[in-house]
Length: 332
Image (cartoon, rainbow, N blue to C red; front, side, top):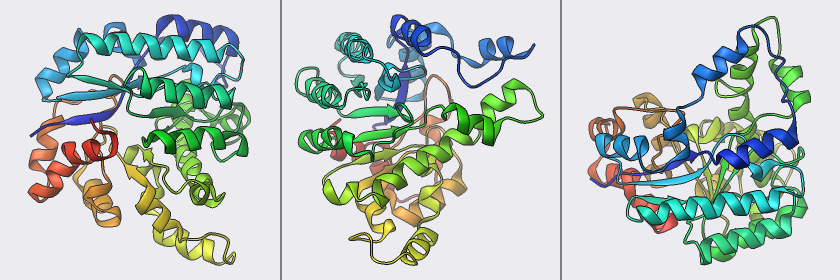
């Protein structure tokens, strides 16, 4: 069975260093243990910065045929600064060069400079038409703005034009949100985790998808394809409630929320290999709306293939999730 995974990340060290230099300190106030926590939390450099090496060894060992790779933490795509344009181009060119060394094993998602929507739209088209990328990934907001902001219609239209998806990935919440919702009488490491991979950035990524629906962006762009990780960032399990509650506000949208979701959004597991979650999401949106992912190098699983092989699925569902849906949506 062919295995394609689509939420897999790399770091461009020069771009990351420049993003950290420009953006300055984040919302976490370090305490005595925070530095050592971060050193242990972050993946090893070889896995994060190279497509060959540890990554390719892991793929061979667990049975992944193709990874779709995108920039991970401290991405220049969310840098609200003019330099983001050149940094994103550097990241994309570097990724394309590494993919060219193993073209049968890797594909790419573009990193887009959301600071400049026109440049972001142009970069998406360049990455698809010249570099052979299969979509784009954005991580959270840029300057506190979500993709439903009207300035990003250029980016959404570009994604429609190339007929490839935007992966709406979690990003670090803005400082005021992080402090108000996730800081408390606990260590800095727990603030980081609560606001990020434990809960906070997943909730925000779900809000991001909902804003695109509720704003009418998906009516303006009915061909737009969206990917949402971590089993749909809470939203995929909340569709009935959303349909009911949004309808209380009157006829604002052309379709029910669940219809937008089931027609224009695909969910991925992001390495959260849990049979109960798989059962529920298959029941809610169908196996044809699920695309496989591991979240390498942040999540490294030994059972990438075994989970699907042993899952309570029909053969048709299993192959759709493993590779068929990615082939149909992205031509991987």
